[in-house]
Image (cartoon, each protein chain N blue to C red):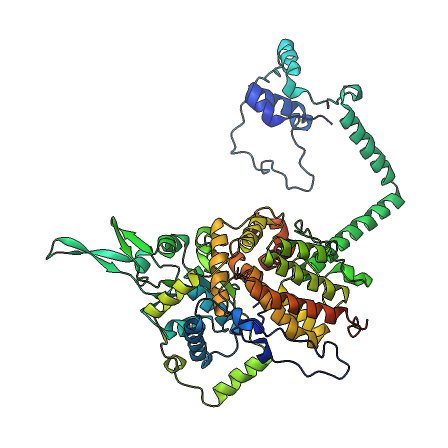
Length: 362
Length: 277
C-alpha cells in the first residue's frame, strides 16, 4: 500500500516511561532529556476502546493464520468495516484479493454470499425476482444473492453497466426496490468487490456513480521477498487443505454494531474538518483532473478517518489519519484529463500532490 | 492537346454531338483500314464460273452533319466548357493570403535547388527520427532531465496561506499573551510550534507545511534517535489537547508547558548540535 503506516501510532497510548527508549551512546544528545511522564494518565482516550482493540485484533489474528503480510490492506479493510463502507479491491491475479475478502467475511458471524460477475449476468440474478404462485394467485419475491451481510462480488468489472446499475440503490441506500416494494437489507451490509486491472477483454469500466459508492479502492500489491518466502515455506510444510477452515468467526453483527457506534462518537476538531474539505475541494480545481471528488468523498474521508483513529487507539482524528486515507478514498473518485493520462500520470500521484499542497492544521 | 469532356458533353448535348466530335477527332477512321500485305488474300478463288455477279453499289454517301454555329456559340458560352484556369488576381487576395503565398514561394525557391532538396530530405528524416525517439522515451517514461546529469527540479509547492509563519512568530510573547487571556490550549499549541521551529533550526527535521507530526517523528528517528521518545510524548500531549480537544485545566497545563520548556532547553543547550552535513 502506498501510505506508510506509523507502527507507533497503532499502539494504544501508554505512559511515556514505558516507551522503548533507544540505547544512548556516550556522546549522544538529550541523554538526560526528561520524558514528560508526570501527567500521561490524563492523555488517554475518553471512550473505552479496549473492546474495539480486542475485537479487531482477534480478526487480524484469524486472518493472519492464512494471509502472509498485507498488514496495511488488513488495516484498511477493518477501517472500512468499522466505517460501514464498501471496498473495491484491485490487483493482478494471484495476490489473494478474493481470499482476503473471504477470510474477512469468515471472521464475521454474519450471512455471507459470493457472486461471480459474468458478462451475461442480469440484474435479477443479483437482486432477486418475483415468481408467480398459482396456488395463491400472487407473486412471491425470491431474494437474490445480494441479500446477505457480507457480499463478495468477484471480478465485478466483468458484468455490463446494466447489471452494475442494479447495485446503485442497494449499495447506497441499503434497500432493494422491486415491483413497487422496498426490501431493506440487514445490518451490517458490506460489499467487497474485486477486479483485475490488467485484462481488457470482456471487461467493462465501472460507472463513476458506482465507483463513488465504494468507500475505499485498495490496490493489492505483491508481497515482499520475505513475505513470499514465508508463503512458500508455509505451503511447503503442509499448509494444504482448505485455509478457510482454519479461520473462525470472532465478531457478531451485534458486536460490530456496537463498535460502529463507538466509532461514530470519535471527536473531530473543526480544523481537521476543514482540512478534509480542502483536500477534497482541491480535486475539483486541479488542472490534471477532469472530474473531481464529490461531497460523498468528504464524508467517506471523515468516516474512514474516525474508524482509523479508533483502530490506532485514539478517540479523535488527526491529520495523519486523513493523509493516510486520502489515496484509498479519492483514487477511484477522480478522473484524469486525457493529456495527463497520456503522460503516464496516475490518480495516486495527483492525490499526493494535492495532499502536499494543503497545509496540515496545527 | 484538346481536352474533351466526353461524359459531360454526352450529358448536356446528347450522344449525337459527342459522337460527332469524337469522329472529328479521329480522322483515320474515315478511310478504310489497309490490310497488311502478309495477310492471305480474301478474294474469291480462281474458279468463279459458278459465282453470281455482284450488283452495282447503290449506296449514297451521307453528308457530314455540322452543328449550327449558334449552337456552338451557346455551348462555348457555358461555364462547364471553359477549360482555362481562372487565377485570383494578386491585388484581390487579402494580406494573409499574400503573405502565405510569398512564404511558400520563397520556400519553394529555397528547396527547388539540388542542395535544397538534400537539405529538405535531411530535415524530414531528422524530424521523423526525433519524433520516434521522443515517442519511445515517452512510452518508457524516461525522465529526460536525468540524461543531462541533474536531478529534476523540485517545483515549489502551491501551499495554502499558512496560519502562522513559525519563523517570524515571537513565541515568547504569543505564549505569554495566550496564558494571560486564559487560552491555555492555544499556549500549548504555540509551545509545540516553537519546538518544531527549534528542531528545524537545528536541522533535525525539515519543516514543511504539509508534513504531519508523525512525519517529523520519523525524521527525528533518523536524525536524532535519542530525542524521539520525549518528543513523541510531547506530540501525544499536543494532539490530545489540540486535535482531541482535551479539557485543559491549569493544573494539567503547568506540567505540559514545563515539559515543552525543558525539551526546548535541551535543544537550545550546548549539547545539541546540528547533525554533521
